[in-house]
Length: 495
Image (cartoon, rainbow, N blue to C red; front, side, top):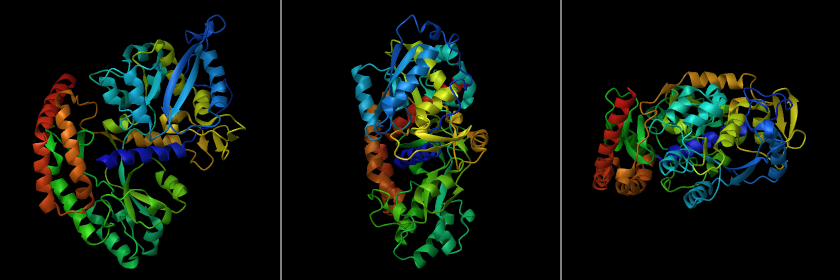
């Protein structure tokens, strides 16, 4: 399950490259945002000192950040009489540093949060984030109009919103991703591969023809058809559940079959001997791999191919589904200690409704950081000193397109969103307070057994019973009982 978070991050990073910024029109070209007078604070811009909002977000430092933010602040001050102090924290450091900042009470107004970095549910339950219901109604109507209702509904905690989800792909869909050069070389029809078991003839053919290649080169985190109640803990309900009864996922026929299949593939030499501990993605650079598991978005095959510089194709493992972790994969929260909640929400409303501002923050300054190609397309200037991760910043549907993007890019995203089904636990946020010790102990057991079971490095007939016994000894049943109690109460309250 750790791989789910990694795959989610990779999927989002792919989106960010595909949607890397772009500036549209002039300053008068904005949509769904209040005018200077309507904003409530903007018309006083010449009379009152502007409010400064401190905004933390995730990403590598940008050389021209101050130059871009100077332009942002001219615009934002005119609109809502506020300025933005943007503080970037690098990817690997963000979660830990933001925990320290929030816990210490260091001032900030807005911060990126998610299911995988500076955990949204944990932060809200610790009191780091402000409840946003009233602010959304008063100053965030543009956000409510722009977002698919499932974003706000699915990210509620105990019935309340504590952050604004990014308007992007709504569901998650796992896919088998293939190196097309090997498929073509051996005349393999990847569309026939839909299940883990159906991969076998592909793996066998490539291994026989390319003895120095491991067709599955890394821990792919095999798909299990469950909606998990808590990240890193193997309890949840089947995706097709009708009774909403929590189960110990590893103690199910589905999990046992997956582990047995992976062990069969491992014994056949389809995975590296050290796959359980192997780090890095050198195989992607060399092209020495056949298949892995990823999460897709519209046009992901094109993007993967561009990034790797060789053709990649994929086939779906399941239909698009809206999970709690996909809804909360990229969000902006307002600090519970902010002195400027109104202006913070007004800024987030602008960021999600104002096309000019959204593209400026994302892509930088026209002629300096990108070239304008048409009204809604652009080309980044290489090594310009500015380029942000699009998925972390706000409404992606406002972004201009790259020159090679399909003309209907955002329409296809909307179609993808509209096609999704809700996962059974969407909107249910498990409160771990009563079982924190058990959760820590169970996670240790998952870390001990999970990598070897997921990669087939051990015989599940021998090791899986020991793993299940260890999970129980560490308190899995107590966690599951608490989760079931909360789920039953949540369903009763939400009908």
